[in-house]
Image (cartoon, rainbow, N blue to C red; front, top):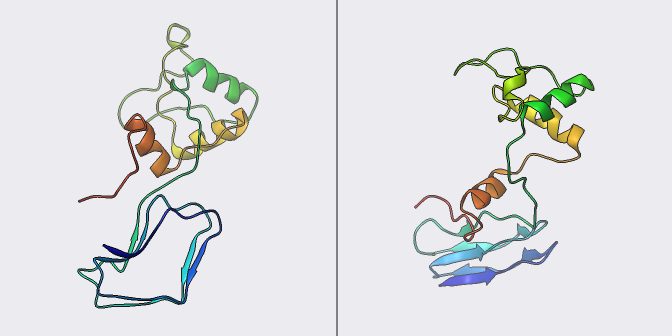
Length: 144
């Protein structure tokens, strides 16, 4: 049992509490952005879980399909992205007409970031990516 278990609202402040002899001191379950935990006295709780945060995120949209070579090439042609030239795991297929509808490969993080900015999007956070990979089945609870 937790001393405080909360589905935090935006900009929630959890402060000035004396929490002891619980299973988990403060358990923020699906904590919303802006929650702050400060000035709490936590002691004699079981284990090492005085503070337990579940990985979380707000609503988001993620593309169903990968960025294609043709889409990435358009970004390069408009000057927002750099052409892919090489990678450690094979040859890039960027610019090959017969592979225009294939996923863009050999694009590093900065290239992906540049493409997203050009496309009016953003890269997903780690928590969003994990959630999408699980097809939306529940929060990430860390490694057990």
